[in-house]
Length: 251
Ligand code: 13P
Image 1 (tube, rainbow, N blue to C red):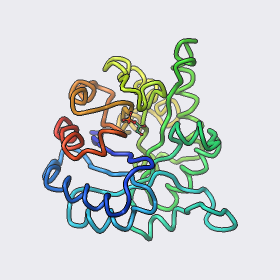
Image 2: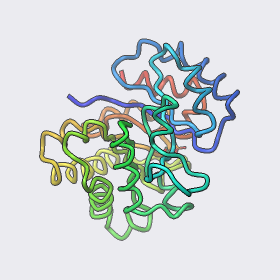
Image 3: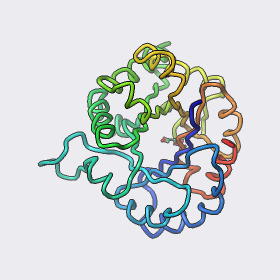
Image 4: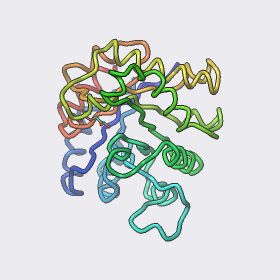
């Protein structure tokens, strides 16, 4: 019922020329892999090159952030309307790196989510606990709180355009992957929070990704879990063969 989504998050990597070359490499490798949506979320400056390179393929392009205001004196920021006009379809919101380094809060994550959805973008909303929060036993509480805060004032209809990525902070870029059971459990907490807000049928239909050191070796096991409907992939999305192998694992 719910759709698998395999999304790369390039973070602050790849120039426009490199973006073009990598997408050209990936296109034939992921062609026809229709059991999942294939998305690459790229730096804003790479968006035009990425969209041009991906044209006519099954690769969709996303951004890595969006501002919550429509326009105005917000130097350095990019609006949802700008992304839409550029041809962007998805946007990552509330990544833990933005929460950690750029002052992103649950409230701004919510505002960005609403701005993205109201503009017709698909939002990939990120939640996840730190190692300290996990060790204190707060994982379920934290994941449900972050999920509910992010989705405040979102309508059940708009939930069709929401993807939630469970990314344990301790698993991002560390090479330490959550076990498949930990991923399934975390994703299950997220789905339970969606059910508490929107009811069981919306929760069942919502794509919940796992992210954090997902790669070509561990993807099949992670994706085999009931609550894991795809991946948000950092490092391994910068290599065509590894990313294609993850897409293959979602078939
Ligand atoms: P890595 O796959 O590099 O651990 O990054 C995960 C991530 O943060 C994706 O958003």
